[in-house]
Image (cartoon, rainbow over all chains, first blue to last red; front, side):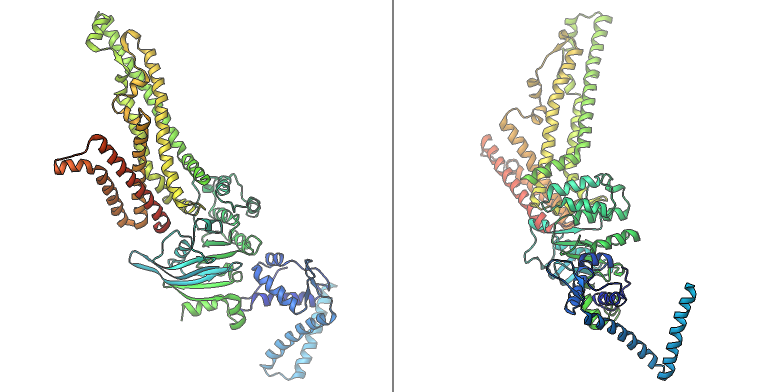
Length: 130
Length: 229
Length: 276
């Protein structure tokens, strides 16, 4: 686990984003145990208070679950997991749309370009693996 | 909680502290930031009653400091405060002899953490290793508050990394820490609270996560605003 | 109390190397002195008796029989004692200043010990007193040894023997080595008073810087004036109405007051005024 933090977003928010990404990409599986807040602080080199804050927020959002004194686990709730994935995609799309709109490109042209680029990248990847 | 209330301090005619107030909570890392010579060390000395203040009051958990306080609060200066010629082991024994809050198990753990050899004489160590011994002797006390004077100053990058790691570990967990520094880079995302000092006064004190969240600013952004208006 | 004893132990161990060196030095110089003085006396006796043909009785009549005091009055004996006294006197100051100066400012640690800071003061004073007492005890052992060496070198016909009891009654030795328990209390009480006045003067300097240096010197002067006040009375008024025993009582009273004031001030300075 290695995260480079930027200095202007709250660290706990960045930790949560990191968790969401791990969940969306499947690096964290539903029901998987996650490190204690102490371990997390050590691994990410952050203040234990910040780790605590991130866990508290994630708990409230239903991303993780803690039963009694057992280690916290990633939720198995399909709805939540879907929502996380969707949220990440929406965030990325929002950013993209925001920057593309500022250069006044028609949406059809953008969509074509996206498809082209997507195929290029996956094709390129495939070629490399051959 | 450590409460520093409107403390003033003169050295001869020079007013070093002109009414400094701030608080530091248990379980938080409070960072006192200011250029060299601004009186950061004086504040820590005053908290520990190592130098008298001319006005104001300092309370530790609501009490003024007394002999029992030194089992609950400790100070890690940036100079060695053991006798020349003492080994790390002898220094640890000295601490064990005098402090009931000395935690030998943690001391042993810290020796391993910092990769120090207890049979070495402190004065033969590198600057970085001396700083680690200093930290060890403070951290191995079961105290509520740790005051550290410039823990990162003038030591090599690897020692700095190792020392920064202390702050993210259980070694400081739940304790109140006050760090002074003139250089925030190593610890910007570790601290809970920043106290910006200049001209003998606190120019601003703030929670670092709050300014990120509410104003989208980094600690250095705020410093820039405060120090270069 | 426990921490106080640990502090005394620590302070003693810090000076132990130099202290042992002082003892070894004293022993070596004094024993050499016994050999040298006794041998030169014997050489003189040999020359007179065997070369000049003087009889033993004539020689003793002219030069006197050798006593242990011939050695004890020499620099061989007095020198090392003076060195030890000077070293300890110097250490009365260094026992504090070494904590402030140098690379390791140990005063931080001492002031942050979870014990009354007065204990640091008292432990340092007690260490000085114990070191004086130790040197005196060792001097007694050395005297016995030296007396034996003296008897071994100088034949019985040419010497007058003295017991240890007789030797220590002589002149300044009787001040260093108290003859009675009362004397012991008086001498070491005065010693403790001296140490506490010096410590307090030094702490005034440490607390107030340059101004403190003057204040400290002033405090020492006042303490001295108070102790000497009966003498000064005679000098200035020319009359004096107290019997010797009353003077002694007065001096003891004054001494106790000065010691108490010094210790109290030391406590006050260490808790309220001291700066690292």
